[in-house]
Length: 324
Image 1: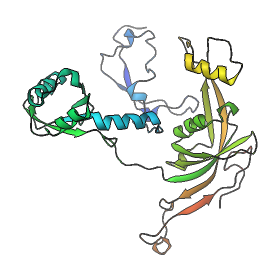
Image 2 (image 1 turned 90 degrees about the vertical axis):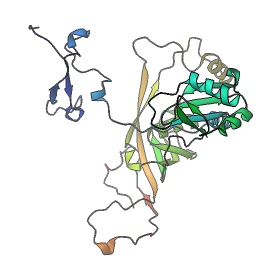
Image 3 (image 1 turned 60 degrees about the horizontal axis):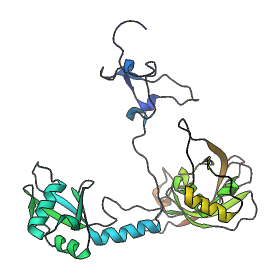
Image 4 (image 1 turned 45 degrees about the horizontal axis):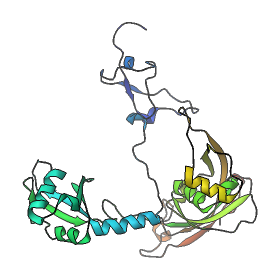
């Protein structure tokens, strides 16, 4: 390499071509010299996987409610208070200061509460040992000060930091080629979650080729026509189970996986054709430039059912058959 300083650079993610897509070279701009490439193991590698400039701005994931979540919601609602410091004071409210305040004004001793830093807009998370003490402190909301700021207490609820959403589209999907060992409720739920959906029911299969499901979807157009299902390889340390009872006992004792390779986690990739068979649509019409007389009246029920013709072995939209 020639003389002089070598510094990192910044690229617009929109300008980076995909691995196989070719296209124009990325637009590169100079970056602060403090990020020296010479400090890296491979100075010629300007970009690193996981760098903020290369990551998407936001992701939207879906997780299913579980009985464990229900139990936590019940417990938090009974034993947890969220504390918010009100006012323009710059002094942060600390767990230690809050404990001292509660001890002075409410008679709370350290064994009766655990105080932790909370996620904004709240400042502190208080977990009490009894419902009575939790309710007693709640009555002190906006009546006591800590670090020269009034403290507002509120009970925890699942709507904290949430906003309303909905999975609006009831749909029938057909997974052709889904690995047969994944024909379980838990596995199908996992697949649908990553497609922005929630399982309603698995329909009785007519063969081992395809599995039909009913699901709520956030956006049917988001669902790929071909879905690659990736399953990490198990690495159990014991001999393979010879019966379902042995398998369940092994899962309980060892968990799903044994030690993984320190360099990578092997997996199996299964290409699955995803047929969209039906969508119950109550959303706005997907149309532009229509004359006013063709538009639905305000408040009119827009519910319609889209039925799509699909062909086994063919990707939707490639055989010339349209929906009705």
